[in-house]
Amino acid sequence: MARVSVAGGEVHIQTSRALMVISLLLGFFGIIVSVVGMKCTKVGEEDPVTKSRIAVAGGVLFILSGLCTLAAVSLYAAQVTYEFFRESTVPINARYEFGSALFIDPL
Image (cartoon, rainbow, N blue to C red; front, top):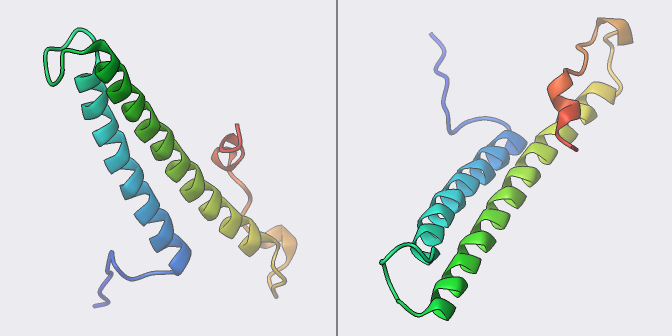
């Protein structure tokens, strides 16, 4: 019986997985930091300037999370596109076709 490993695989898949895990962690920490930075919470400093800076830091974490997700999806889509258009012995009509999810990414 063949063993399938999560750690094994092609480089672009491993890179996409790593970027998605980083994105999830950044999003999680963004939520925590943003909750601490909200004016209605009593956690941390009471100074409104400090609270607003903490909230901005949470927003920056959310933006970084989104950029990591964008990079992971774009990397994977570029690899799928490359494999689709690469010269091959398989006739063009016998290859797989793009799904609609691949075209939703750039939006």
